[in-house]
Image 1 (cartoon, rainbow, N blue to C red):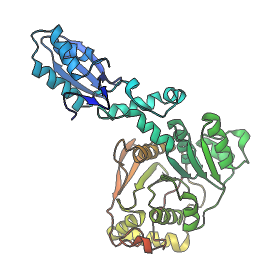
Image 2 (image 1 turned 45 degrees about the horizontal axis):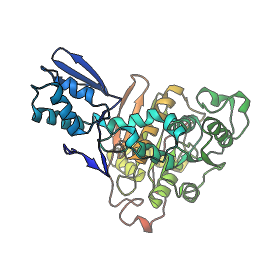
Image 3 (image 1 turned 180 degrees about the horizontal axis):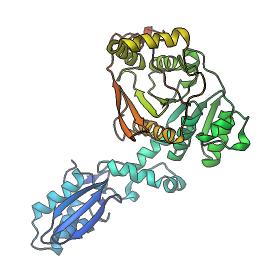
Image 4 (image 1 turned 90 degrees about the vertical axis):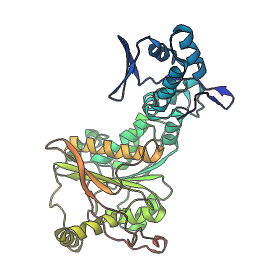
Length: 392
């Protein structure tokens, strides 16, 4: 909690009620609505309402206390001070925007103003909500796969303000893609996905720096060559189904790059993330799954040995794609900004179309003896094993 007297960097730290907080004045009660919650403040003498309206960004903590006491002589100074500190402790107030330093230009501050208020809703008093947006604009993000999930994710990343983006795919656009691949249109059929995706993204956000790879991945080294130097990797590629996860895991663990992956499984979707050196990796997951279930062990071995996958493209429904993309991008925001801890490590979450539920399908732990992410990972370059989910 920030102390009751605020001085920092030569200016008085003035308090403003966050724009995401709605105050209500009821008889002998002040109610604050924020993030679907309600805080009730007893207000028999009107002091709490005076305090709330004084949080307009023109006064520091001491000034607010003095203002309330000057207007309501029966108010207790200690009680008002405590109330001010409660507003701070519960993250209901922020610094006025004009007192915050930022490298964002005027256009960015306007375009992403809703982003900044979103980040501000969870920021502690004194934190700079503009800094979260700056982190997004400075981040280097790699997306493998420009299909259903890929196009939704790419569009979301552009809308968030990501500027430095690398995208990879080897396919061309087909008519059957258009039921869920939102960056393409009928006139694009037959063109390369990566170049068409780049064109659409630049039409939406002209300041982006986008690198493209029209490449079919065939090894860990292929993946490593593309992902090296990025802050995060999002993999929603689906070919080759039984190996892409292995290569992704080995390459990202080797270079210490967090990655997020997911895909569709008929009427459900799944998603998870790996933070090398902190969470378990994909090989830890499969090893745990094999220990828990002998059938999983037998089937995963068969998938590799016989290269078993769907005989024809599996169902791919746009609502599942949209929900999954939102989950994956939300996790990426947590990694890139630090606004909250990642939530998909060491677990496989699923969204089910049938009952619209989101739950945890599997869990695992980091294996210190894992041949991919174990203690001597810097001396290991084998592929390991991983469960692979498709982005169809």
